[in-house]
Length: 293
Image (cartoon, rainbow, N blue to C red; front, top):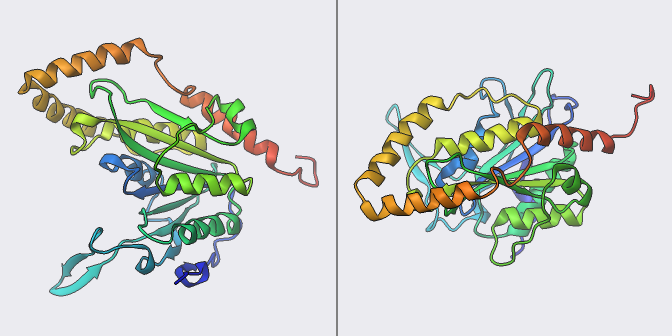
């Protein structure tokens, strides 16, 4: 049976008023979020003390709960069930653009409806662009700052940011489906992805989250208040210890380091350049106001 977006999207702007040059961030737990680096990066731009939840996508029709099981929580002897959550959160940023974030879980079913819900919210809130973030396992060493790569199907935006057009062919996740729908509707979108060392996929990687959030901060021109230095140092010790006790893995990491150092330092322009060009592009899309500004 088909599911209509009006049945699953609980959304109201309430009294939040007009947003300032909003951009939508999409970070979904699942296939495109190895080590949760992407969703953690989106969290960096949400201050839960002041952010406003303006909507939620109902989880019930989208998930096979034998694959993504709900959790049991007990608080003050009260037992409750925690279901997968897909919240739409507005973060007002004085002096900077506002950010609309979707933090959720990649659905198993009804992808068309799920994507339609995202697009509906983006258009209703006047988002100038949509940025999807992800993390994927790659053959890179944990001893180097992980690369952040990006792509966009928008020709002008690709030219300004020095990004490539999407070239991947094969199985995809909800981010790929969303990108295709945004392209079909002529809505500017960018996909940013950070690499995770594939031999340490089950560990945490704050260095990857830091690299991704840094790029997002410059692209959005919104500060990221999270300092990752202590987490990066702590997990580097853990990662090094794992490698130290495996001679074959140690040799493999050295090979990855040599290959990594032969490549260009970054697959996309610097974070500063990205931010300037992204803002210039969005400025060019806005109609002039009556005063000519």
